[in-house]
Each structure stands twice: as C-alpha cells, then as structure tokens.
Image (cartoon, rainbow, N blue to C red; front, side):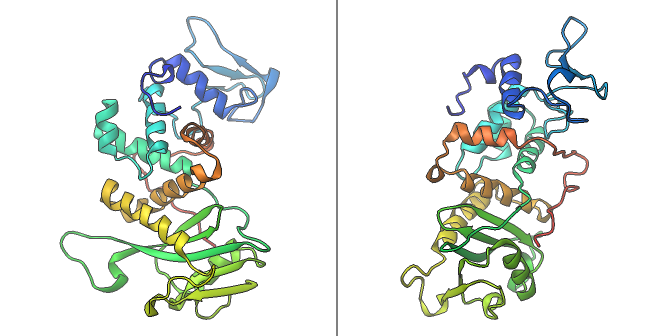
Length: 311
C-alpha cells in the first residue's frame, strides 16, 4: 500500500480514525491519562458526542486516539494527516513542506509544522547498544553548512556536526553535536557500541586515541587514498550520508540548527525501516503511526523538545 490518495483512509474521517486506532491501540483503547484498558474504557456514542470519543472509568477523563500524541489539538483533518504520513515515509529523500502544502491543499505554515510534528514522532531515545560479538560497527561524522545571511566563516565554525554509528546489516543511530571532540566521540561510542564489536573508523583526530573500550578498532586512511582493505571500511555510512545530504540539500535546502536533530531522526528512521530489513512503504507508515504516542510539539515552541543528551 502506497500513498494512493484514493484510499478510503485519505477520504473518510471515520476510516482514517479507525486505521489510526488500530495502530496506536493494537490491543484495544488505552486511556492516555492513567493507562486503563479493557472494561474501564467506554466508547461514548450518540448525537452529543463526537465520533471516536472515549471515557475512562478509572480517572473519569475523556479522550480520543490523538490525545497525548503529536496529532493532538490539530485542526488539520485526520485524513490529511495520514496522507502526509504516507508521503513522508515513502519518499526516500524526504518530502518538502511546499510539496505537502500543494498536494494536500493546506497552508504552508500548517504543512511546515505538520512535518516537524511527524519528525518528532520518529525521534528515538537510542536505548541499548548496537553491535556485539562478531558484528561490525562503523563510526563517522559529517557536517551540514549553516549559512547565516551572506557571511560564511572559514573552517567548521559555520557547520553543524552529525555523528553516526551503524551496525552493518542493521540500524543506524545519529546525534547532532555542537562540536566534535575526542571526549565527546569517546563517550558516545562507549555508551552506544557493544564492547565486543569490531569498530571501524577513518583516521580523523577524534578516533586516534583508541579509548573506546572496544575489542577491535580498525581504521582506513582517506588522506592516503585508502577507502577499504578487506572488510575494513566506512562505506556503509558514506552511502547513508550521501542519501542524507541529497535530502538536506536537494529537498529541504534550509535547516535551522535547532531543528537539525529532527531531520536526522527522519533519515535514521527511514534507514532503519528500509527494504533491506524487510519493510515496505505500508509497514514503514504503520511504524511511524505507532510512534506518535506520548510526544507533543507546540507551534509556539517548536524547539522546546530539544535533542536528548547523546551520552
């Protein structure tokens, strides 16, 4: 199933609500206020109640499927939310707010905020570690130009840094850093990479001290034209960054520093739900829909929910 806008969930509010409820509440309605389920939750019906309204017998609160999610208090119809969700997750390099604005016939301001809400839903807390015995983890960093007016400072001072870790054949996790330092890189790798992994990096200064507590640390020297020997390389991350930068430069073009972590979360999510791991467009949209719970983002403070500490 792709983002075919003739599908009933993109045309009928009731169908859209039922589809979303099945993803957010796979085992039946759950009160977002106290967590009650089963017989404690009752659907309110009748002319005086709007469709999809429930009441909890435990805390006496009323709620719908969008309460305490990134969809809460939105005046955009749920049908358009789901259409945007499918377009967003099916587009390999992302989809711009202008494209959503034109396709769904909503204002650009609404489309811009809608997209940031969806990115907030995709943000992961990065629990646990990647890698393990016999597994390879690559670490690398990239920089996004942060232009302010017409003045661009030399060096890395005008760039925003993204550090990524990827388990070959598995998932990627990325963090945005104010500055890339040896101490910062060491803390991130120690927290996120299993100590029995094989770690592969280039020879940048951040990786020279080898103080990561990792079983094996192997490097490729890009300055000498070395990009791989045997299975030692960081080409997996180079490919990921190529896609990330095509999206950031070709689709989004402009990104405020306070929002970069959400764009990073978007590309991480799509990589971690790629076809190579058994996902299709429909499964990716379902995963995104189930991730909207417990997350809020307000228009007045879109930078309020900042990136959690990377270590």
